[in-house]
Image (cartoon, rainbow, N blue to C red; front, side):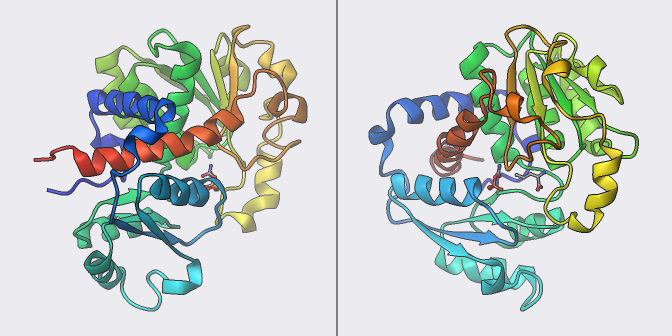
Length: 308
Ligand code: CP
Ligand code: NVA
């Protein structure tokens, strides 16, 4: 049976640990694994702009011997030119896998349901699992073990927050989320994270206070206040998020050996100050690099593991 990479909720803690160790192997021995995808083609469907996701997937597929086919928003016009189900069924006759960046999470679920090849979520309005796993890999490189760590997420309770909640809880890392009222993380993801955390010993905390969340944190994470597709709300959001910027004053409350993370693209002077994102504790370009290694691991996992 094929396996998709839509949500981290669908993967066990052990599977996430396996992905982390595969990503490490691939990062350190890139040549050893160069033909895992030989002869395989991948459709990369993008409804939104992208730097990291597009380039790291195209490069990763190439490095594993496969062939990436980029489909820009106007090429197939997901859900407009023909039904998503027909796109999924058609593409399944040509390619061996689909990576999709979509507005509505429903579209990625429909693509996965209607295609006979693995579908990988390259970001939806609900989640960004590839980024969250690359981030877990980056955290592991810095701290080795997840247990006993605290990740503080400050800002918008968005797709990134949802995926980080599941990844942290499944890997046993505590997470404190500070959002303004009305911008909380998705309730289903919070509930699922709390259920996983109860098994792994992690603590999931929600607050409106950035100071409370950051206190003693080993990892401090933020993301844009205006995600792709929310441009019309920009003025209101910039007002509502005042006081939620990650700056040096806020970070003085974190553990002294903390790292700063951001999935990028970043907005200096909004969710993060310039000195923080460009400072010595920032690992944002390691996160960006690790997208490549983690996504190669995800593709190798989907194609070489026996899934019953
Ligand atoms: N972090 C991330 O997904 O970046 P892109 O939007 O550039 O792909
Ligand atoms: N929350 C951001 C993440 C970008 C990688 C967005 O959806 O635009």
